[in-house]
Length: 462
Image (tube, rainbow, N blue to C red):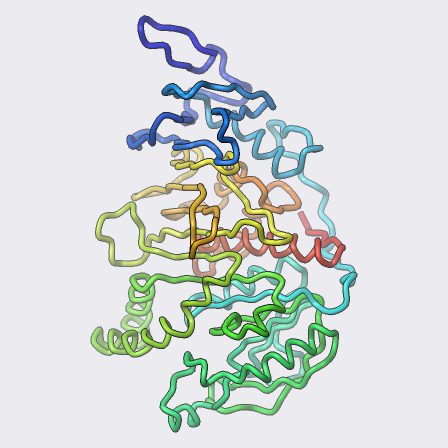
């Protein structure tokens, strides 16, 4: 509703705030005239509405009603607390009731999984450079399917394979064409496509997809040689992680979902300095030389694969601290392609709109430089995408529930599942920033994708 105050006729909040709000809550600014640049208050800004709704300016309310505005400059203010029921309703589906003050969780149940309805496994790919957190990501993802992922029982203790109740994770280093000495002879790095046995990779992934068992060799990272093969049975979910999962077109076409971890050069450099100087005593000059030696092959053979990925998790330096070069505070983006089969992108507040949000400091404890979220449409390698972004880090991880309540389409099975999963791995790398948050969110989307393809359901313990 609008009420004229002198010559300034600007819509404003009603005198009585919605249930659940208080004067301490941040204000939500929906500005459809031009982007708001003043971020001194804690609020979020919708720079433009969803591009799917272009005929009129529609402001979605959390209680199912809409107000249509003209194209004149219009600003609407309401409490951020009022948006929580909307997020809760969308997270649980259209038939769910609005959340009350005390969130209702499902009774705890044991993780169980039924056998996939279709023949062969659902195949997931994860591409990333070495030292970019693939192992941590795999632990977060496989835990959502039940059981603990561990090397094959009774097998080679140096095996790169991880097997749980329903998942098998294969490291694509096992498909190097040559061992360490062989690469010294060839003069090529493990990043080079010429050092990969893509024919063997294709044959064995195809066999596993057809439900067959394969004898896969093991690249021993300790000794640098190829160890005797291990027996791999076809699982329900097959995850291939490594440097080149999407480089070969034959292999790429077999994936049901493709993920790329994209760590910026600045962050890689900061991480390597922290690790190699502090833990291994390397000099700054030797670290720089090591990075520069790898960069040409990485740029030529690994980085181009992100164009084929369905989701890219991009790790960048923070924008909250000018000229930051420590790499401790990170800006993380989850870039999601539109139109991917069996995948519905999660969003913040309003699907398709452009949102910048600085959470309420009374509900989300964070020290300097604070936390800022962003959501909106974009383009990536010429394709339409939606982007979720977090800049900053959490001080108290349990308070993530406040952020989770404002995210929709997360594929959680109960209220607080994202927060629960983050707390489960709170000592792992990236657990207090967007790296862990978006890896967890991506894992939940993969679980939903598996359920849709396999026509089954995984029951998570609340």
